[in-house]
Every structure is written in C-alpha cells, then in structure tokens.
Image (cartoon, rainbow, N blue to C red; front, side):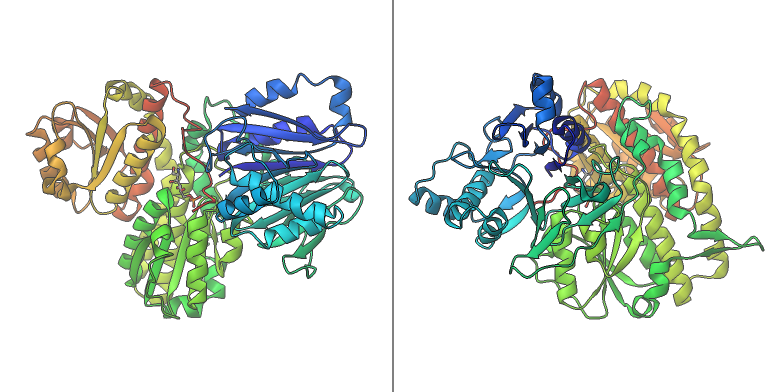
Length: 624
Ligand code: M6R
C-alpha cells in the first residue's frame, strides 16, 4: 500500500529518504512527505507534495547545504489514499497539534472516528481527514501525560487502536530517537555498522544498499531505536521481545530498469530467466538423463501433504488467477479436490476447513492483508498452510507453515507479470512432486512434463521475439472501450489475467470469460467495434474454441487470436494472430500469457499512460 522509510544516524538524511521513497513509490504514489530533524537542527521540519516523489524531491532540494547536513534523523512516506483525498494536507508525515511528534503510517485505524471524538473532547484539533493524524494526536495525548516517554506513549496509544498499522514516530525533544511499531502491515529495520545508524522501510528494498542485517518486526511489537545502541523491542503487553537479526539478500540491479523504458517491460522480458531461477536446484536432470523434482518444503511436510484430500487455494488478483491454474494442475496430476477462493471472501465466509486440509496461499508481495487473514483463519482451524510467495521474509512467507519461494526477484511494475509465471512454475513443480509421491502420475508422464518444463524458458524467448508484432497490432486497439478475452481449460485463467492486465494499466474495460460461456450473455456485446482476444492454442479444446470464434466471427467481432505455431485454420478467421510454440496443455499458460502482457503494455504506452504506476493501484495491498 503506502511506503515508509526512516533513518537515524550521522549521515545527511534527506537524500537517503528521497532515494528510499523513489524505490518504494510503486507501493503508492498520490502524495509523499518527509519529516527531518537532527541535533544540529532546530525542531522538526516537514515537507510534503501532492503527486509523485519527484515533486517532493524538488521541494527538499531547496534546503541549504548546511540544513542538509544538520538533518540526520528523518521519516518519509509515499501515500496511497485510504482516508481523505490525495492532498498535501492529508499526506504524511502528520504532526501532533503542538508539533512535538511526527508520524508516518501504513494501514488503517478502524476506530479512528471514536478516538477522534475523544481527542476533540480533550481539546485536540485536526487539520486533515486522515486516521493517521488521529493516531499521532493519541500518542501525543499519552506522551504529554506520562512525562514524554515516547515508547511508552506509543504503547499506550496502540493499546487503544483497532486496525492495522506500521508506524514510525519521531520527537522534537530528542532527535536521536525513533520509535517503530507494526500490526498486520510490514516494517523492517536495517542495522548499520556497529549500530551507529539504522534504516527503516516498509519492505527491505530501500535498505539493502546500506545493510543486509535486518530485523523484521512482528505483529504488535514496538521498537525503540537510538544510534549506537542495540534496538530494543517490546510487545504491546510491555513484555520484552527477542531481537532476531536476519540476513537479507536482494539483487540491487533488479531495482533499476536496466535500459528498458518501464519496469513492466523489463519484467516481461525477464521471464525466461526468472523461470530458470525458479526451477534451479528443484527440477534436476540426473546423470541417466531422467528428471526428478526436489522441493524441501515437500520433503519436510510429506506425510501431511500426501494425506490431504482437500486443498484450498487462497489468493487475490493475479495470484488468484495463478491459483485457478494450480487447481487444474493439482486435480489433473494428483487427483486431489481443489477449491480456489478469493482470500477476501474466504476470510469472512466461515468456510469448511478440516484438520487434514492444506491451504495454499499465493502472493507476490507476501503482504496482502486479505491473504494473511485467510492464512490466520486456516491455521486456527488446524490446516497446514503452504505459501507460494515472492517476497522473501514477507509476512505471508513467515506466517505459512511451509512453502516455496518463486524466486523471480523484486517485481516493481504495478501490474504483476513475472510473478504470475513464477507462481505457475512453482505450482507445476509442486503438482509433479506431489503426484509422484502419491503415485497418481506415470513415470512417462512425469518425465514428459519435466522435459517440457525445462524447455519453457527458450520457448518464452520465441514468444518475446514477437514484441514488435504485438506493438504494431496494439495500434489497432487503442480506440477500444471494451475488450473480451476468451479461453478454455488452462487458457481460461489466462483470459482472466489478460483482461485484468489490460484493465489495470490501459483503463480499458475488459472481461475474461470461459469461451463457451460467451453465448450465455456476453455475446450480446459483440459488434464490429469489439476486440475479442481468443486463446486458441492447439489443445484438447481447440476445436471447441474454434466454434466459439465462429460465433464471434458471424457477429463481425474483431478477433485477435493466440495460436500455436503453424496454425492456418485460426489465421483465416482472425484479424490478428500471435503465435506461440507448441507445448503440453498444462504448460500452455506459461507461453500464452506473454502476448497478453505485451498487448496490455503496448496499448497503455500508446495511450500515454503511466504503465508502472497505474492510477489508484497499489503494488502491495496491505489493507483489507
Ligand atoms: O502481492 P499479491 O500477489 O498478494 O497481490 C495480489 C493482487 O493485489 C495483485 O495480483 C494485483 O491484482 C495486481 N495489480 C495484478 O497485476
């Protein structure tokens, strides 16, 4: 959702904060702000700007060189509005009424109205419409009452709060002190050499260029941070908590565009390499030329996984689409019943979860609030929770009993691309390994799928070579106001994913449908203006999809078809065609989704839209 950065030490703080905010901008980008202080500076200085971090940067750059060096403590925030419109007033950091405290916050304070009324009763006034300003005033209320002990005041205030938060607070009286806390919203503290300085981030991205030693705060923990002292952590009940220092390893080059105009295009083109990474050390070719799959998560929880007669996949958005593919893979190979649930519905639905069930949680960020809540519910009911996550050390990775990282590297573009194919790759490996253990797949089938899986990166390269073709044909579709995406079998979730990609970055309304369902309603929309993307690769439903396409053709719909190389029949029916190499049915999505991603990308670029940071979207949805 929003992004938080913080720093305390001897360095000039504003360049560190601004750089960190740029790196976190993908999390939220309607406004940004920083609060600065330091021993050699007077009080807390706040800068805010509506829009991109660049607008804030321009303001902060007006600071004199002396002021730049005097400010050595600071907090910063890039916002994705939840309470109150995007504006400077509503941007973080928020100050307490007397200006003694400044605070940045991710999450939502659900009882903020009630708390606000109480604070108004104590004489507090408010400038913004945010829940965050209520929180800083509440902390100030206890701070003034308890002799200005900041950590204690934070603790007292958070005990009154219902909701989710990651916060960092600074105080005017002591510029050598920051207090951070979290509940259901991630926060990471990076430790500098000999504790001389500390870096804070809502994820590890802005910290890794300075340090690899980090502390992931746990829910309901409060950290007291002072340079040259070890971080102290207490729980909300005031008991002291263990400080677990972990090593984090993120490839910094993944945080730049590497010569591509947008992160999204870079991430689309990274996919062959990402899929190789995802399979590395897991799909193993033995000396005899046969394949085996090694997944440590499976080895450790084999008995429980084999016993499962019911799998529930919980996820949101693109990860949910990957889950629909996972359902087909697991059911086909393992003969286990699988349900795929939107995490947001599952968590409030009183679902039937048995002790022997396995709940697979899929998430790119590993921070999605609804998926985390679904995990909590599954754990309470005794199910084994298996995470398929990209964000290393993320909340979901830590909450799951076991799991598999997809290992595709940081995904910065607002629209998920490489995480989707990484998730499908992991689901394929998991299904194969489980089916092998269950004996529900023959050795020939197992070997055939493995052989074909390791060919996928090279076949992806072939698809990506058609980028120019997709760019050219996207010109013909920028006019459209509606799109229909049709697919069946393994290509049905790809149709959903194609429609989602187009919607989120080009702002064109698009719907994905199982092709055969079209005649039950959506066919009424088809006319000569309506582009229909048909996933018509050669699989067991190929001829059925052709019949569905004929229905479109006879109503003058404009067909863009994704076909298997060498297909002539569909070419005669479609206005535009993109070819993908032949592969096994179950692996088709890994190839057929690439033209979907490229199409959405080029249409959005042609429309002059901000591809990497689509309006209203947050990369990591840490509120429900
Ligand atoms: O980080 P997660 O995979 O849990 O995120 C789930 C969705 O928020 C995410 O896939 C979203 O739909 C993306 N914008 C898709 O491009």
